[in-house]
Structure formats: structure tokens, C-alpha cells
Amino acid sequence: MDRHMIDRAKPAAPAPWISYATLALVMLFWSGNFIAGRLVQGHVPPLTLALFRWSGAAFLLAPFAWRHFMADRAILARNWRIVLLLGLSGVAAFNAFVYTGLNHTTATNAILLQAAIPALVLMFNFLFFREKSPWLQIAGVAFSVLGVIIIVLRGDLASAASLAVNDGDLLVLCGVTSWAVYTSLLRLRPHAHPLSFLLATFVIGILAMAPLSLWEIGSGERLHLNATTFGAIAYVAVFPSLIAYILYNAAVRDLGAGPAGQTITLLPLFGAFLVAAFLDEPLHGFHAVGMSAILGGIVLTALAARAAQKRR
Image 1 (cartoon, one colour):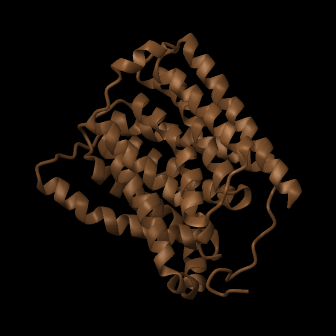
Image 2 (tube, rainbow, N blue to C red):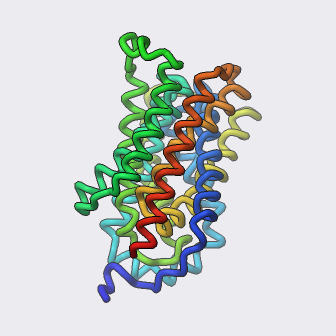
């Protein structure tokens, strides 16, 4: 057994439906993250928001993780390259790109662009590990992407010719790519305690964001703290950060990167309802059609994962 790759015994995986249920909760929390990022636009600079997010999450996590972190410091040190890469891609880069992009595009666009993640995860799985996905899983990804396209085009295929991609969309796409890399490479994380690994990646995110936040404030960006901004900062530190990352990392471990990454397509489903509730953007019939396709794609991917598990 390679001590650099397996430093602790892997715990028994829960039933797949439990992992999928926790992933649905993760997607709900992450949908709210985009709403929060839009609500504080003009009040909290994007890179500073990311710094507040990870500083708050690390502060809350530290009392529970510190004992495990100290016990696992040798494991983390031996595997520092992959820990650093995961911290930069999944914590620092993803959030820096997304929060900055939200200053130049709508929350709806940012949420919908997350649907590119499952296809990118399959691509990176092949590029990094030569892992070929079963056809049923590929069909599930394609079906979910079709559902997102229906929502993006508002049920009108002819409107595709008039779509325009702005700088904010491109920044969000960079974040999407970073997250797909993180999801694909999570299989290489050291088998330390989940909380010690999470604290290490949060600290990497803080160290990466701190100088960028100082540059942001120094360049003239202003920070306006009020009840709304405090509430948004508290939300992004607890729900889409601390809780969601624990659940997501566990689901990737138990289900695999492809099936777990596929549930990202639930973001448009939850996001549409949250945008309608908090940003006054109405729901239409094409949302229902697109969401049905998204859910159908997730079901196909779950069936593919179940078939693969039976073969193993």
C-alpha cells in the first residue's frame, strides 16, 4: 500500500441515496452563494468577500479541526503539492473568479454556467486519469446540459443567434473550469481526516486572497458594512463554505467525481427559485421543461453509477 496515497483506511461509504440527498442540499447552499454575491455588489469588493468567506469558515472550523490537523500534519506535509493544488483550484481560484464575475453579469447567468462543470469533469477525468465514462453517464450529462440550454434560451432555439458573452460570463467560466479540476483531482487528496484536509485548503484560500484583497482596497474599492452585508458574509462563511465543502468532498469520495459533479446541474433548478424569490426574476414554463431535463440527466447518471458499482 502506497503510504503517500493511502495514509488512513477509507471509511465505509453510505448508501448512494444519502450521498445524493446531501449533494442536493449542497447545491441549494451554493445557489444561495450566488444570490449573496449579487446582493453585496457595490458594498463588498469581490476578492474581499472571498477573503471574508474563507476567514470566517476557517475560524468556525478550527476548534473542531485543530486536533485532527495537528495529528495529520505529517500526512498533509508529505502530500503538500496536491493539497496546495486543491486549495488553489477549489477554494481560491473558483471563488475569486465567480465573485468578480458577478460584478459584471447576472446571478442567473452565473448559476446557469455551472452546468458546464459535469462535462468538464468527465473531460478532466479522461485527461488526467484516462478514465472513460460509461455511455449512460455521458447521456445523463448531455440530457442535463440540454435542460440548461432550454433555460438559457428561454425555450426559444432561435434566440441562440442573439446570445452575447460578456466579461463577467468569461470570468465565471474560468471559475467553473477551476472547480471541475478540483472535483476531478479530489481522488488524489491524502486520506487525512476530512476536517484537517478542509482546514488546510481553507488556509490556502485565505493566504491567496489576503494580498488580492489588499490590492483591491488599495486600488480604490470601498467596503460598506451594514446589516445586509454582515448577513451575506455570515451566510457564505457557514453554508456554502463550511457545511457544503464537508458534504461535497464526502460525496465525491463515496460516489466518484463524475456522478457527484453531475449534480451541479441542480444549481439552475434551485437558483431559478432563489432568484425569483430574492431578485424578483419571474419563473416561466421553459424553466419547468429545462428543470425536468436536468433531473432526468441526474437520474441517468445515478443509474450509470449504480451499474458500475454492481460490476465492481
